[in-house]
Image (tube, rainbow, N blue to C red; front, side, top):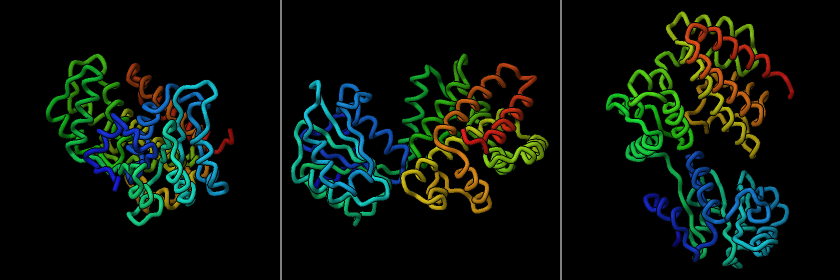
Length: 342
């Protein structure tokens, strides 16, 4: 059996076993899956941007031509050096293609398979857990200890201390998706730049929002492309005590969530299933608006919206008297752009 225990996965990632050139990375924490896949790619090739060193395959490529994976694994790099193949499993059954490469592995090429949550009986997982030349790496939601270590690592990298009450509050607000948690901590560190320590007020301003439910209306209206509703809902949120910073932060969290869900849709999930698998899942009262947003936005446009919101957040902090106008104008701009095709 070559199923790696969850506690041993990071050790394997740090020093991949050359006797196991086929690696399946799977689990319900999509952010952690992505993070570990990226780490494996960096450990396997000299330049991940070099298409001769790293071949990228989609599930559709392999379901139509199962022998393609073996061919790619045994391809000799044009300019020498190390080689790897990255496979995105998606919704298609690629067990036949993986079985072929398990039966004829290449000692000079690592095959990395990125998958979502797989039941123990799933053919792909069962195959990789049983094969001596493969390793199956589960990615489950971070424990409290994992999150505490993540906070400490990111604060250390940012050369910041964090107050005990701020750390405890931040810890309670994270989880479910490693990438989302890491992004929230980095956003907090960016917000606290210039300070010696992160305080509770910083966490509440950037990561948490006591009036989150009150913000759903204005955020959903913006991404669903409803400018008229944005004005009305923005006024409600401000009357309810939500600060401009909290509103922009909520929009940043939502655009990150939409981007993740949109990628899942493009990988083969239905809009409804992507919303159920979100972290956290979309509440039924918001399904119509969030579903509309997923149909309007592309991943590339969501990334541009994320950059626009990040710039607005910075502008609002630099120009506190204009923070409300900056936040409102940005959300109205998002609503107007939502229904544009480019």
